[in-house]
Length: 252
Image (tube, rainbow, N blue to C red; front, side):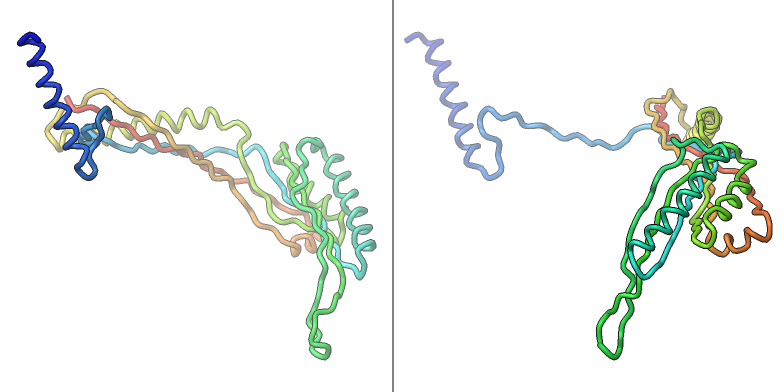
């Protein structure tokens, strides 16, 4: 065996011996595994959050409404609920609301009970049938008129839970809010750079989070009782569309 081959064999034995000793150490990596050196993951540069807000005029009203019926029998309650809801649906469609914009949200048949102290048990007093839908009204000016028409159609069985206003296509509003948010972020970053006596570099990271807050107005059965006497007045007001943009700038 040549001297060169002998040295290679000695070196290999030494390496295997060190690996064997290392393998005996608790928590050490076995031979053939790749160990990684964790470096600091601390964020570098200047990180800021810019905010943009835009006031938008709603162009859609979503009405949550339906019928509630309580009777001594399920069949009678369901019969009355069906008749009343058919009238409500016909009224909605007759006022220009498309069938695709009407969606059932809740339907239930619930047994009503009360506690009988004499018998010391619950006794059935009747049954309640509830049928709730949402109707999307695209003509904001007709909201009050439609509410009054629904109240008349459903009579004392009418139920209106709430009305909310939104913007069907907020794309342009988001564009404006995004521009404001970027300007806000850049202004903050420049101030921080000046206070820290460093030069602001290019943006290296951008992340956006958007918010949309629809205007919701709660309405109850008391409104329906008043509807027969006076027209319902509805004001959509304004809704706010906002977004936050987080930006990281390099330091030059």
